[in-house]
Length: 419
Image (tube, rainbow, N blue to C red; front, side, top):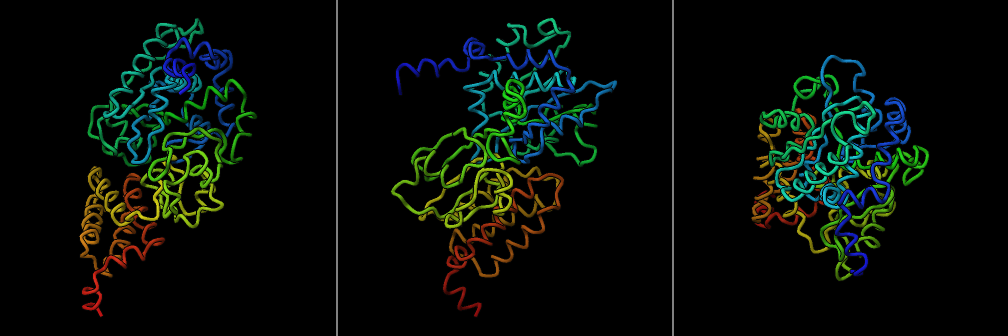
């Protein structure tokens, strides 16, 4: 690496470097605007959540009641436990003050006086880095009472997560913050009406809030012209698997999938063919490598292709990949991480893991393929939270698009016996 650039990178996370490059300028600007105007800027920008659901951020902010006798809370979801996803920790490490500034602007816009940044328990290093950034921001007067003499005040608290995938689900995250078991809640009521400790609460992803200062500094029109028109703005894409240069890349939404793999991530080692791609973290439906033309990294393109942008954790698998083994590993994860509250998920994820392991051992039967699809179909849409869907979608998409991978794993003796 360039010896001139390296020292700068090593200091990117510091408040001095952040302020020297315009940091907290957007927050100061927001304080000169009314909360309604700030919310409207974010709403008109069409910023969509970067946590997987792609829900319009400004619209979500409007759900927060303006007048209430109860405290109002913001939860920043930094649990990031979706396999294949590692973008938020880059923000924690290299640009923590951008996240803090976005958090403060969101609190001002919604009249929130306490924000919790919930970071997964395994992220010890990044929890410490965020706490240092928060301490520095408080020392400069950006956090606390009567911030910069504006009359507005808010507290920000870094909360170490419970080390469970389910706590990335917004209502389970709130239960965890309250000191309860990370069980998802039945909705309605929704968090904006009944959230933390029964009070109005908004939950936003780390990357989502990190986009907010850019919108306030440059205006909604500027932001809305970046990338895909219906899903605008920059996006962090984490590329892993069989690529020459895995990592996190910032790009406009709407960049073609093949361009991300070959231009940003340096292509596949040995110029091997791409067999399959998981585009947005392990829960998103798998795509065939020979059908990637015309698919880009934005919500609408992914939906049209039968998948989802998810958390933009793109996993590339080359022609030699054992997809049955990949799916068995994914199924094991979701079985392990199921909270057990809903019967279809608690029981179904276990059945899926058992049946897939039969194929891994070479003991699969032809009827097991349809059995897995049947189990997945009975899980999908029948659970309180989306973990059940997350467990079902990889099964469904893999069987639909790679059924032959399972059929060829059925022993000849089993086929002859069935005949």
